[in-house]
Length: 244
Image (cartoon, rainbow, N blue to C red; front, side, top):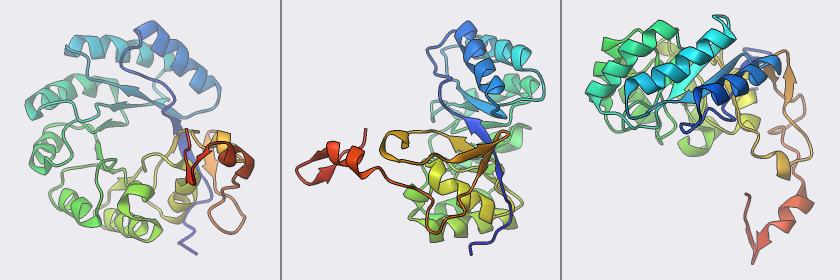
């Protein structure tokens, strides 16, 4: 009903890759992800000196090989000049993208960074309106649109942003909520990845279907989420559901 462009979407994991982890721990974790069938993994960057980031990333790249995608996420921690400097070093690692390198409101900075590097710059986790995505796309300030269905206002605005990104020949790789995004990504031709974050597992009775490193949308009507109401009730406090 939403488009039916794809029957499955590649899956990468964000379960780990934390900034405090050593190179050895990152290698072990990422190799486990690869052996589990994931096609990519995200690693945090932003250590005090660029050599620290590079030592960790180089170790992972050597271990996983060239056929496994590595994404990096800076959580908006850099200045424009430092992001350009880091990107110059990161380019040798053939990364899938450089995520949230700058504060989300700095469109001009993202435009400068995008023009200065061959790495795709990913934004969207902290963007809350289709018009904001439009500004990024018009300025050629991003190469990946990470539109989040819960933050952009629901399914309709998510699809609007995805189709808008397609007109600029930009891929969509949504942030979080894989259970909702798997069907939305399958609906549009420019969706490249689903992010694996299984934070709803404890309050659902079903799991997102995974086949050979790909997320597969449910064939059932609706959103494809089967809630475990008993588990949810245990988290209920005074009429408010708290999901941990």
